[in-house]
Length: 92
Image (cartoon, rainbow, N blue to C red; front, side):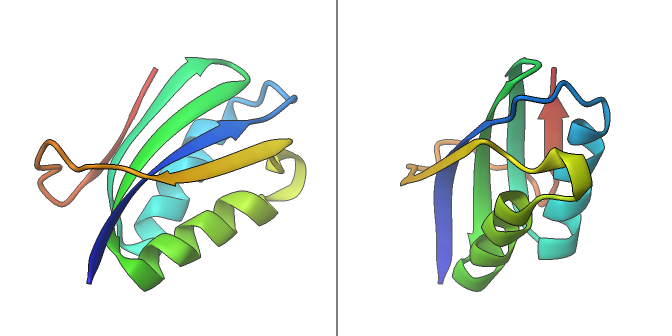
């Protein structure tokens, strides 16, 4: 079953690889959606895909990679209002 969630991610470290890490994690999980980098420390992500793929994506974000480990991660249900056309975009 498909699921759509909104993830609010806070990270204290300003890291240029954060964008790449989010994009690669989405690709590994096989989800579609968008990430909005509001400022260097706060990211809002809308992720859509199979429930197990969403869980895998959240796990990848939560455990982080090296210095990309988040300070805070909040997940809530989200009503999908657009077609992401099977891809994941990161918008700065």
